[in-house]
Amino acid sequence: MSEASLSNAFFTILKRDLTLAYRTRTEMVNPLLFFIIVISLFPLAVSPDPVVLRSLAPGVIWVAALLATLLSLDSMFRSDFDDGALEQMLLSVHPVSVLVLGKVLAHWLVTGIPLLLLAPLLAILMHMPSSSVPALMITLALGGPILSLVGAIGVALTVGLRRGGVLLSLLVLPLYIPVLIFAANAVSNAAAGLAIAGQLYFLGALLAMSLTLAPLATAAALRISLR
Amino acid sequence: MWLFYHKLGSPRYFYNLSGKLLPWFGWLTLLLILVGGYWGLVLAPPDYQQGDSYRIIYIHVPAAWMSLFVYIVMASAGAVGLIWKMKMADIVASCSAPLGAAFTFLALVTGSLWGKPMWGTYWVWDARLTSELILLFLYLGFIGLEAAIDDKRTAANACAVLALVGVVNIPIIHYSVEWWNTLHQGSTVTRLDKPAMDINMLIPLLLMWLGFMFYFGTSLFMRARNEVLHRERDTTWVKELVVE
Amino acid sequence: MSEFFHMGGYAFFVWTSYGLAAIVLIANIILPMKRKKEILETLKRRLRRERS
Image 1 (cartoon, rainbow over the protein chains, first blue to last red):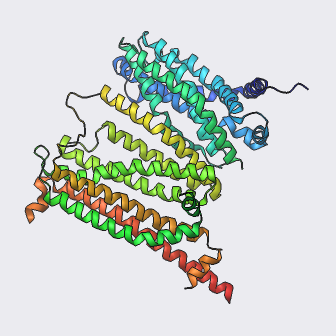
Image 2: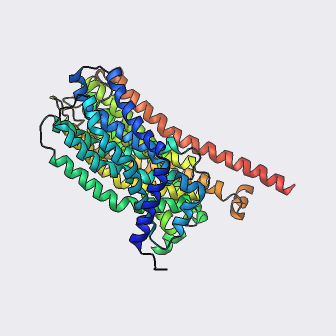
């Protein structure tokens, strides 16, 4: 049997997680429904007046995306932890952080991309000017993976706990704040027609940092939680 | 130096050493805070702009500084505990968390009490106050995670990872909050800037800062000694200690 | 003397901050002391039970 190379292991984990997610695809829809419902609460709660909604929209959409990702994070390791697949993963010859990267990528593909595709619909719902929709898509494309990567650290820390859900949000939300600040601001600047290169560079830098460091921290956290 | 470092790892050595240091730290703290407090409240001249309300600085600035310092102590103690598996380091990290949260809470409340006379509102989304608030959430996350995990060893290691991730994120959070603050700068500059500090105002601030540092040492030693007694209760040296 | 307590009109803010600081600082000294007594008590009781 050919010695399983690292990329081979990475893609098998990715394929496995995607097929697992596909099998329970009704579950995949939950974060999306949450995303839409939370956003449509605001016109009811605040006011349907387009001017007000337009000024609220970037922040509301991004906070909703943040919370939707937070809710969907738990599924990343929970099922594998229960049936012991996680322990097998830790015993593999390959560095755990690369396998974790595979799982995080799968989680992002399953929850991050749908949020991204849904964003234009919600931009219309919130009367956002068409100039800000591309910015919204770009920030979600850049910010989404960061949310999954940093969230993976929190999930790995609380995977062993019975009721880790609320604690997970307390651990992870403070770490999401830089992404929220730059992304929401980029969208509102784009709506006002200003340049948003600076914010996108910063989001790109955050993404590069999370891509390199977060899997290491997640692997360490997994090894600790599963001891 | 290395021998001292490794001996510090043994709970018994730490217990005896901290026992000797504790009275010194305690009295020094009391002296520094009383002198600093008296000097700051009475001798220091009132600020030409803020009058006497600026005297809150003698609590606010040392507390804010300590909140960051204690988080760094926590992260490094966690790292030592994680890398060299030193039980004492775990104890220091878990004992300093509540202290850090207390300092952060103190900095937040005194910051808002100082803001009221100056801007008429108890809470200003000023860059430093906001970063302080987020730091409080990081502390609460640390304490929450530690309370949630039953096994002491796993809890200490998990919290060490969280503290390390936190300490990497603190500059990023602070920078983005600063950037966010300059963005939404109201017409009136609402910076919580320190008033012009002549020497008579600066010395009490340094005294209070030093007093808070020694206070942290005192309270940390007391908590750590309790934790050592509790965790080492089955060892003979603790039993002998109790019998005396 | 009363002028001192008046703190130039900001008495409430200054003294609340100092009072709160005193409470927080003193509490973090008293609590560990009480906890130490508690630990030693339980340990003594346990030892007495083991010995008898």
